[in-house]
Image (cartoon, rainbow, N blue to C red; front, side):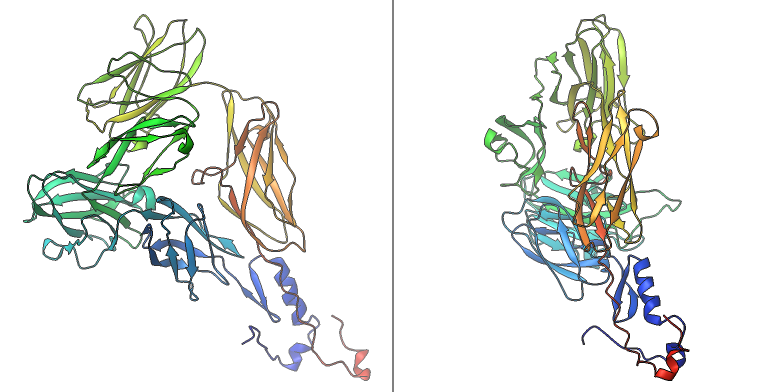
Length: 575
């Protein structure tokens, strides 16, 4: 078939005062989501793929991945944030083949499906280092627990319905630490609060964990003999409801890593200074080499992977990163950071912060952001011992610390860090940092994908958050706009309504070709030249936002109605 079809209308309809072709042409121009097929207009949809399954692959492998949701109309394409995965979408657009080559960066990748009508939100996809195993039902009881054939594997599973429970049978060698860790809510955005249990062969619970990192659980155990154990996973909803029972659903997707190989929990220091050779002390389980050197030539290395069961992401910064000294009373530089650990119960770490009267500094103590169980409590005292600041949580849902202090005199301040509940272990680590307070700003968007209609402008609101009395005009503009789309820069003045938000107006010319891709909304202050990329809370750093302009409607076919006879021409209605 040619993709066209013909509809024959009665002669009475053909003689209507307004021809059908004209009506359809006008309708096509009035909507951005239509496709012209011959002289008939058919609605076209953007893709509504919500997730992919399985949501991961082992590096060096090729896998068939199902697309969950609707593919939309027309050709479906895939964008990836790292542009490393090779992908081929099948003709039915319900599956794709993904190849993760040996040089692909392991860890979390982000996918976006799009066509010429729009794009999906970002969808997570993991590239792992060890073999993948698919969950096989039924496996909801000790008697039918799924056997795991690999000594190290990542299981992809779904708690498909209410009261669903999945069990896996593993063989563990004596003397090696077994690590079972879940990635679901944090990485895959699954709406589940999972629980993880380790059971002996008879089904007796040996260990239980709920929230090791956010809503995702983790267990570690070192057996003193070779044994066979069971791992059980179940979940409650991450957003509590009135039902008190185990939850499940098609979107309760998880990745459960079961391994006795090397796993990194954290590094000391936690942050690497850009361009500076750094000896990283690796902390975790089954690590044959506890120190890795990151040289100045590879300071941009993103992850640790060699010899590990799970990739470990590295963080770099422009400021010095030190490690806690066992001598105590260590100086915290401004700007700078110190990686510390509350290694035992009731321990308190103390640091000195030099400064002069009136100097303002932002102090931050991060632990749970880095998957540490520490709930930090910080006390700041002056030279006389007077408490000038005591901070527990940044907010109701943020248990880490962010606070500002002002020096009352020229004497150093003392910062004390401990655990809110007086707990401690080798995993109660934290990152303490200090930065000079300077006026600055942030720029935010409500959405990370926009559709530009052809028949009217699109307004994008950019919210400006001016911090510490930032008093400069800010010019907001769009970079990487394609041919035929324009947007004049706007200015956020230092006072008035525009100081808090501005609206960018995008317009497309009638002849502009269709477009679907990334653009960046860039903000630049007038005096200091401070630049920011506007983004949402879910945006990738500096990646921009997705913009779609649908293709221009196809020109209507020429009127094929037979010419009127001369005697009819005078009375025939015009178009």
